[in-house]
Figure 1 (tube, protein in one colour):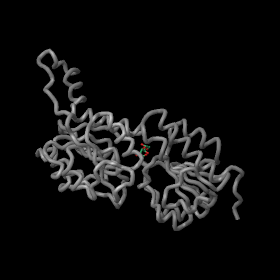
Figure 2 (cartoon, helix red, strand yellow):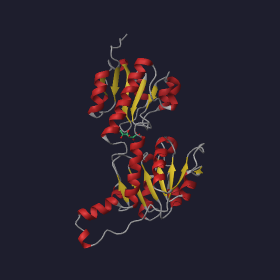
Figure 3 (cartoon, rainbow, N blue to C red):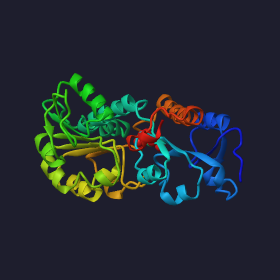
Figure 4 (spheres, rainbow, N blue to C red):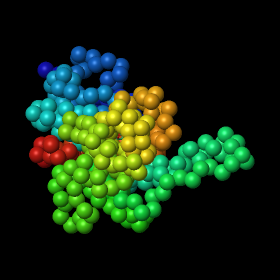
Length: 320
Ligand code: 8YV
């Protein structure tokens, strides 16, 4: 029988920023999956520190870690984790919801305005020395638009709060109409898209939402329509989006996420009616520091009290 060291053994699946590696190293006996998993170490691992964007945490890895109790995710989205497999093994899963919502909502508004007012294109015009030869062409406008929020969770609500200050109409789509929410509700993505001319995608990734924004949704959004995706690339049918942008089915798109990150299709790079960001929604020093701290705090709380701070709903019943 292998005895557990005084500090719980935690396996990090991918490198984290130094400000997160430091508390992981200080609080736990830290092992690094990218250095290889020593068969003698595997049975001692009680916690996993994992990153939304690096690799899939599947049943096969869980099976190699028989003492695993908790998977702590650095990120609010946990479509990288086979949560059903974790729950079936009695492994609690935590995420970092709450500490990044406002940051991501800020980014969504920035991307929306940058896309509609064509700010990166305007800056490229200036930097290329083209201004003396002529003013940058006039852009479309946010004025008079209705913005549809696909997924009115904590981040969707933070986006809606900001949009109220921009004096635009707001509508939303979710599984159910939410009590206490006055915005018009639509039961599916096509009917929401048909009712709005901006669609902001905020639903979680994973099998349930894969390809949700497809050719039919983009057709319903229409030729003045603008798509903003700050959720997951998997939610949008990327080839259908490229076609819709190429042939004017929709007007423009602002994308922070892609189907196969960090690869971005050449066809998107070639388009002028898109603004493309390298998945920076939560990417400020302050917010990434808070996310790392919450991941570490979840591990610590679990090992010390059996009550993690932010378990995901599917494993909440395991969380003390
Ligand atoms: C990433 C994210 O976790 O929280 C999420 O779901 O997509 C991001 O915040 C972050 O980029 C770290 O990889």
